[in-house]
Length: 517
Figure 1: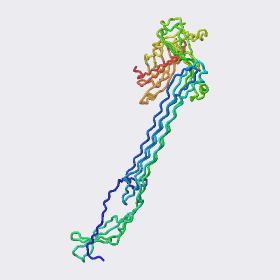
Figure 2: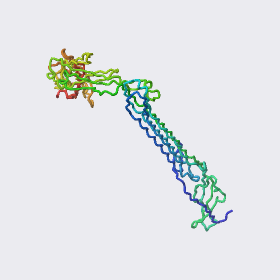
Figure 3: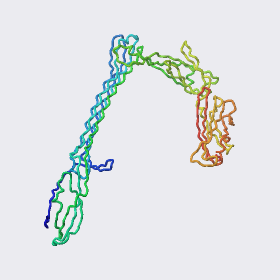
Figure 4: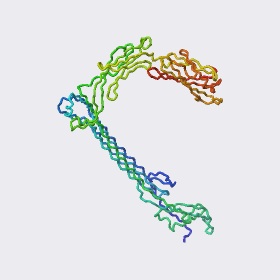
C-alpha cells in the first residue's frame, strides 16, 4: 500500500544519433522507411580501340617468290567493369514505430566492348605471266577483335541487426484532488495513451502502475489502465546490386581486296564525251573503258600458304569504242535551232561487255547503225528534230463561260504538235462548291477529262486546235460545278511524246471564279 507520498520516477532517456532514413511505400500501401545510403553503381569498362587496317600495296611480279603480309592489326582488349559499391551508413534505427528496409547496393559496371580488328590491306597485282602467281603469297585477312571486358558484381545492401519487433501502447488515467484535503474524492482529470513497451524492454512493471505528484494546490494520481494496442514491425535487408553485363568481343576485320591485272599498268579511261551538235557532226570520237569482273578461286591461283578471300577482281579487257554522229536531215542544224544543243555518249559495261550509251535530247530523231567490224566504228544518223526548249511550253491563255459554255484556251509557244508522235491534255476539275451549292473549306476534285491530240488527225472530245491555240470545251464535262460565282480550279497535265519515244510532262494549276475571268 502506498501512503500519500509523491512518487517520483526518473526515466533515463537515451539520446541516439540515427542513421540516414527515408520513407517509401510498397504495393500494399504499408509505410517502409529505408535506412542507409544506396551504393554507387560501378562504372562501365572502357571499350578497346579498333585495330589499324593493313597497308594497301601494289605488287609487280617478276617470277621470283614473294611474300606480303597485309594482315589487319588486332583490336585492343576492353577493360572490365568496376564493382558496385555496397550501401553505407547501415546502422539500423532502434525499434522505431515503422518498418524498415535496408538501402540497396550499387549495380556492377558492364564490361567494355572489344575493339574491332583492322581490315586486311588491299593488293593490286600486275603480271604478264599467270604462272608467276604461284610464287606469290599474300596474307591480308582481317585482324582479330579484342577481348570483351568482364562484368563486375554489385555491391551489398544494408543488413538488418533485428528483423522484427513489437511496440505496445498503454492507457493512463489522471485523477486529482486538493492537496490539503486528504478526505476529498479523486476527480477524473484526463486520459493519455503512450508508448510503453518495445520488444524486450522491461517497462511494464507493477511498480510503475500508479504514481502521484503535486502541482500547485493539487495532488495528481497517474494510474495505469492496461495495454490499448500492440503493433508489429519488421526489417528487410537491402537488395544486393545487380551484376553488370559482359561486353562484346570485338568483330574480326574483313579481308582486304585483291585485284589482278594481267599487264603492267591500268589503262587510263575515257568514258564520256559531250559537245555542241554543230561541232560533233562528222567527228570520230574514241572511248576507253576497262572491263572489271568479279571471280572466285583466288586461293587456287596463289601460293597455297596465302590467306586471302577466295573472291577477287580481275581486269578482263580494255574496250576501245568509236562512234560518229552524221547529219541526215533536210534542214541544217541551225535552221532547226539545235546547232548548240549538246550531244554525246558514255561507255558502260553490261554483262561483261562494253557498250555505248548515247546522250541525245529526246526531241532529236536518230538511227543507230550497226558497228562496222573493220574499224569498230558505230555511226549515229540524226534525221531531224527540234530544240528541247520547245516542249513543255504551254500556258493558259484564257478561261471563259459559265456551265456548258465554259472553255479553257491554251497556247503552245513551242508550236510542236506536228513534230510530235502524240499529245494528251488532262484537265482535272476542282471546286469549293458542290453541284447543289454546299461549300467546302478547300477545293474538291469533281471530274477529269483527257483530250487526245494526234499530230495529223482530229482531236478528241470536241477539242479544237488552230495553229498553236488549243480550245478545250471543259464545260461539257464539268458543267454542274461551273455555275456563276463558283470557286473553281483546273489542274492541267500536258503529256508530249516525241518521235524518238521520249515523254515530256508539264503541269499547270489555275484557279478562278466562274463568270468573272
